[in-house]
Image (cartoon, rainbow, N blue to C red; front, side):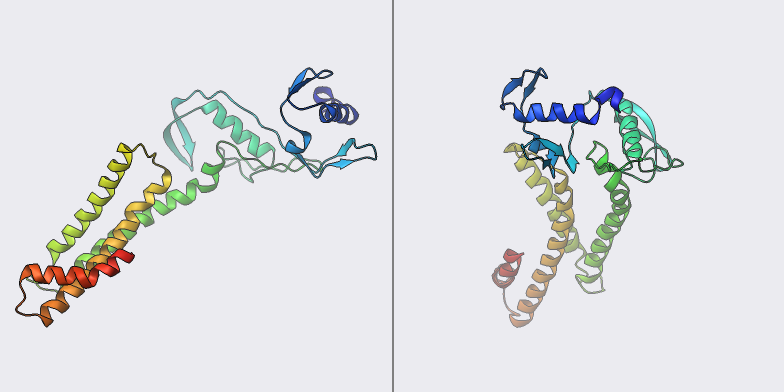
Length: 255
């Protein structure tokens, strides 16, 4: 409002003084150090015949807060959850996205609806809580489904890798496959840690991918082993292993 920011003419006057000043220097009239140009924070700029700014379609601003984390209980999704966070910043951002019309419902008060502010200005923004608000519920819903997918893959492996009898069930082979997948992930993670490679959230998808590839490779090797046992009835175990690795190894290498 005019009481805090000045009139429209005063705001445009300060913007044009900033625009006319050289970069990496103090703007004398404003007493501020100029570290960026007007075009870095404004878009769709309109200028008059003399080159002065008269309007803009977009304006960007950045706010920084002190983050003081505490162990607190927060009501999220109708449930009381314990979390380590800054409750003051969380509430401020929740109120900010609501008052600015970025969201339709208050992130921390489900009974409160958020109306778009009056006037021609429309707001959008990337807040500290934005990713959690957008993807938190979706990720929580997918966690259970991912667990079901792990279970279905393991059940399929045990049930279909061998025959349905005690001798040829290949239950031990299934256990070896699962152990190999686990050792591959933990070993690679440990080796990456030794090399100083930082982990990231995408690494959480690796066990699922390795499990799928490991199960697929197990079926390839078992199929090749069965074929060579049928075609070479007198071959020794080392020879069968060599033949299996020779014909099935190329498929595994590609995956």
